[in-house]
Image (cartoon, rainbow, N blue to C red; front, side):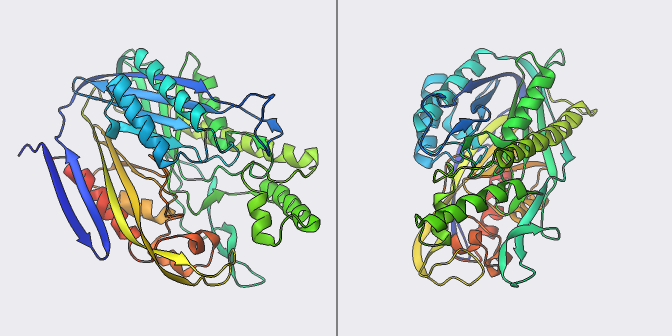
Amino acid sequence: MKMRSLILILVIGLGTFQWGFAQAQKASPFQVGAAKIDITPNENELPEGYYSIRDHLFCRAVVVQNESTSAALIAVDQGMVNSDLYTKIAAQIEAETGIPAPNVFVSPSHTHSAPWGMEAAVEKGVLAAVKEAKANLQDATLSYKTGLSYLNINRDVIDEQTRLWKQGPNYDGPSDKTVAVITFRSTAGDPIAVYYNYAMHANMMFMGGTISADFPGETSKYIEDYYGDGVVALFSSGAAGDQNPVSVEPMVEVGHKKVDALLASGKAKDLAEAIMMAGFGGGAEVELEPKALERQSQMISSLGQILGEEVLRVTHLPQASDSLIAISGSKEILTCPGRTRTNTGREGAPGTYEDGEPVNIQLSLLRLGDIAIAAVNAEVYNIIAQRLKEESPLTRTIFSSITNGAANSGYIPNDDAFQRYTFQVLSSRLQPNHAERGIIDGLVGMIKASEL
């Protein structure tokens, strides 16, 4: 039965879905265009807390258009893109290019080394990249394949000395090693763009005071340099809420130096404040040994090359190409009970809470043929994405986190993780036992609905 629209209200536990989707589209030939725009701050006017530029920041875009509609996949070298900015960008794109707002997917790389306050540059860069990509449209095919990379590791662990929860490498914790890759090619077989997804925090240059797109920027550059001819490589972050690079020692070394200096000088009253001050943007002016910063930079290069090589390996594998696809997008709100923390402390000890305002989480879905890109606008624990992919009716399901805005939920742990007293869990505004099932059921329901 064809359905122009459907709205369901579904209550599961105490989580509430507002569930809506558009009429299914017909598969047809399609075109693809790609572009990237530099949004790096001027070297002579660096924001406060930044002292140098390691590598440039970009907005990258791929536009896919068939006979019925179009979509835009956008990757931005930023820590986050707030919800108001995303809404504004999606509306502008729809008004100026005709791409429906529900089909506009904006995914920040979550680099910890891009300045805050770049909203104007991001808005301008994204719109310019989408317009240029649309102007570059050509007849195309797409293919999907996955690879594996062992660069990420679970980061919730019990300290061997204190026996308390902390952030550190947990070799036995849940960690999805999948690298999902969509390759867009011309009908002659030449690459146009590569969209790849991997679950790992881009925090290697954190607290270094150096602007960097981190490993996602390095990986994309590596792929683009390999192919040349204007090929664009877009990164989207998988469920990396509890996933670090397998070694963050270069970042930890720099962080310790900055935190120690802030505490010694009295500029920070306690450890939590020192970590905050030394965080995004490099914090206080603390002289660092060049070798420490070089070590951070080298690790970014290493991660970028290794991940880039896996993406390239996947693009070279024999794989079937789709020349006819349907395109559809939808967005829904999952409302979960909230909480407000009433004590302090970064990690190790339990938090105390009182009931807080409900938390709204945006769920998004973009269908490109039988590929489902399922997204949440927050940092999600890895096991949630693994379970979503296991339950999805489509084997080609990609999970993209912190996409299409930024929820006020904080981190979204899986239900079991609420027993761990890490800073991600303690700072979450969500009450336990609602978000995990709500996200999985909501996105699976949206995927099934998109088949009607």
